Image (tube, rainbow, N blue to C red; front, side, top):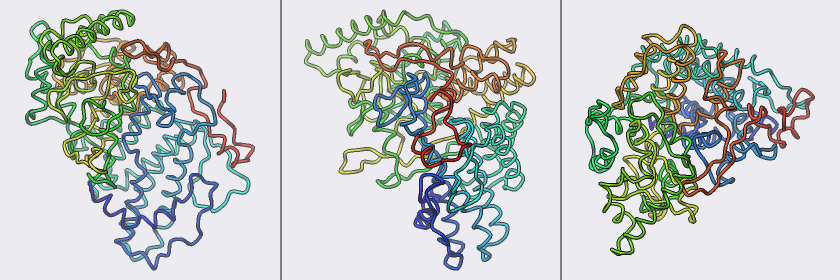
Length: 595
């Protein structure tokens, strides 16, 4: 997929002329694109530049810190704690202007492409359609963040009267229609990494799901599953670091008690975890591409996700999973919640185990990891660690919990939490999934790792979950739903899903499964608002709605407080930044309620 990066840099200067401002009220240079000076090669770079506006994947992880999956300690990295605690204001910027910068770039390509007559009509139509898909996706996302927003599909240099808001319902109808028209035009296969028919169906499935249009979501997701040519990711064999961690995980699962095949379960951990480790996963539908060098790499996937003791380079765990997410994973039977001690008791149990490890360090003059390794065989039966016994394989694949084995960058290391050092995060946990990749290289004076592995933005598993929930909304929980969910279970070595559930019980179950499968991928913020919204949730809020889950104090494993989760109706949508309202004086442009 690297051709997009390489070719878009050819026309990077041109892209700069297309999207010079951060919203519609910054003026655009006139006559900035001279068709006589742009040949087909340069225009391909211009077209590929549209894909620079894809989410980088890493920033999506922070969106889980807007909900009940994660926490980011630094306001300069994320406004997530303000959203969690309902302290957000219009002085904060939630990316509003950036959306419009991207829309302007798309509008430029759409308007300009037919001026380049030396490019064949079929190519011009395809390039224009790709830009339409990107623009529709961006507008759909805008309505999910901000509800009613200004809507412009042409390029203008000025808006002297400002712009009024268009109802989100109208924009969403337009978005789905625009995607349908693109689907009719785009080919089954396209240049690698560029939108094709199945990719556009996948975007439509996601947006239709969030718009509460379950009939369209079901049809679109079904198309991707049946015709996209994608398959769930699996590893051929385990690497040495996987084998080391696998030996640790085996100690936590009573395979015979649950009737689980040990090899299948263990391989399932890495089938799932490895999705983010190497390029060209057969599961990835749309990805943000990177190249492993200082300019085009993604250094944050090691540096900002892992803690310092796990990496020989810089690491500072900027966004971390929280206890509420850890507690959400099923037991190994795949259908029941674990029986857990109170948070207060677990804090005491953590202190007891931490003190035991410190005593071993002092007595043996050993390192932290050496001390943990000396008791590793009895570790699962320590009071604090029992919460991690007999859990869903995706917990072990997704979350680095205290005292757990992490051998990716340093063999024989165990997760340590030092709450007084901010770079250890502020929960005691870290993301195992998504952190790093198989191609990391040192950069910037050997101080950091960066990766060139592409970051999945939409993958097949999401389509299966959308299909399952949409079909249950439309028809009921039947064999076709069970089939898709069991594909996900088979991949991770977990038991099959329950059958015979009522519609509402099935919706709750699927939504919980969705949280587990897609944890950290930037969707939970939108999910809990969808379930909360009676106009979009199919008439059922259930146990995963925002007003249910956004309650209570976030704490780390030693009891230090993070944000206090607080729900308010105003949090259905984010505030427009005051700077944008100051520029847009149109009487039809109003701040969202409650801000």
